[in-house]
Length: 225
Image (cartoon, rainbow, N blue to C red):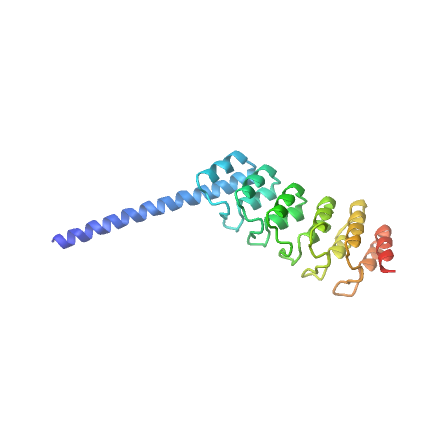
């Protein structure tokens, strides 16, 4: 009888502990998700408070996004600064291989990009298309971001899974306007190889000529003489 009672007491205590642990875990998860939402909305004060109560800086949501990644998506510079200063991983990728560093380059978030570069950005890191941060920056015409990345040791001739370099992407996906002329010129000056063709053997010069991008074609031709 006494033994049975002891077992019941032990089982009851264990059940209570499990409920407490589960409740604590639920609260931790709720705080983590709330911090990610606060970062996404640009609420720097709320993010600072969550960090202050011990929410881990690199917690993730169901898609693998950290608070810093959502801050980059919204271009919330102050939130990004708080998180990076708290030790956020600027190279942490989500389920589609976006990271704060890569996304800052692709979206043209120059201020945040500067912070990621100062805190361990991996220049060899690649996105879901196998491209470095430089390639989508060229694609979307982010001139200042391109200039900044070219000051680093990033590989200007990296080839992504589509078989394109940054130079090819600037020509193929750009509109041939002033921003893309400037980007092509900067790439060539930084050592982009104008002879690197796509998988069909079409060179940047050929692509430029096909699209009627006369100024870009002239810049490329000058480098291939």
